[in-house]
Length: 528
Image 1 (cartoon, rainbow, N blue to C red):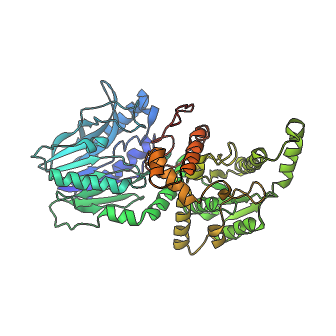
Image 2 (image 1 turned 180 degrees about the vertical axis):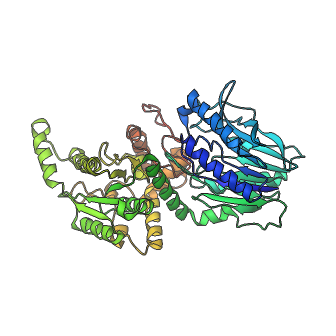
């Protein structure tokens, strides 16, 4: 059987555009002699579609588009992922088309992702159909992970899926496929989405695994791709993905971040980005990602020093902007800060310098950035990281602001990993001073993060155990971490949920993103 895999970048809600992409791929598959062409889960609608799936007009448009696609399926079978309305509600289906008509719907039984719960209803699950004389089991989405005891007469499994990218998830995906293929003694074909949909990045990396668990075809990651796999040909195994991705994790993180930012902007109709450049590691990494995603000519930086900023921070930021080749402006906030503090004296005067004055600086910088966005259309990017988000080391309506956070799901140590990777592939564009300086928000004289925290490699190790792995404090302490430090970090995490509720959209690059895999009550007195 000749199987065409169409790994495409869909836009949620763009039924017309998605339909055109699918029809072009169907025509290509026919021209290349394929027996069947596969498209990802909910390819027609894009995913996640949330409340669009409850709109009858939206589902009707999808139905009309399916009929149009089917009219092109003469001499080929097409399997297209789409939402369909059934008796008990909207379901995620693999729509089987051939001979110019829709032949049947195979619907997903297991609704396990939070982004689908309440929007999709459970269907009937896996079905076996005949294609080109071979029996094929069609599986939609999460039904694949529940699959067992496949009919012995089945020759192959087609997994129509929408698997998002996340650190460690790709290796887990292929280990699961390897084990299932070996145990069931069936070849598996996975077709996946590619591209960004809101906060989610789909990595693509569709593949074919033979009945021994060997990867026989591996499609591109983070790019559209099209391939033909002939099951009767003398195919040779590819590199085992699990090993590859473990060694190249930082490179894949960078590619995922670039794709996520590019798609978020272009699918939203934005073309230009503005970043507050501090001379620190976070804003440098975000600016590099923006320049790669949007083009250097479409990125503008604002350097906004106060009287507490060190001279080298300003010079480092300027040197970096010049190396990267982006436009930048130096806009000191000292006068504005003094004016605000003096204006407030009748209400708060006479008190000691504290976080109030620090927050005024952060919020003034956001005022400047938003003014540039409003006047020039340069959309403000947030430059936060997951460590700060977890600990609440961020100012509401200050450095928590922005239209999009591309690195808010990456720990501080991962930001350094990304910076070193960027320097490796871009000839040292980030000055060494930025990489070597001690982290500081520079909101008071001589301020350093180490004044009240241990080094970030210790902080992040604790946070990863606490958040990503869900370990209790006792487990972390028993693993060798200082009890007082663990208790302090736990307290900071638990006290700052209100800030995370008010964050901009954060690109999900881990397997445990705030607000999704880790969703805590806004008011929570449990505290354990």
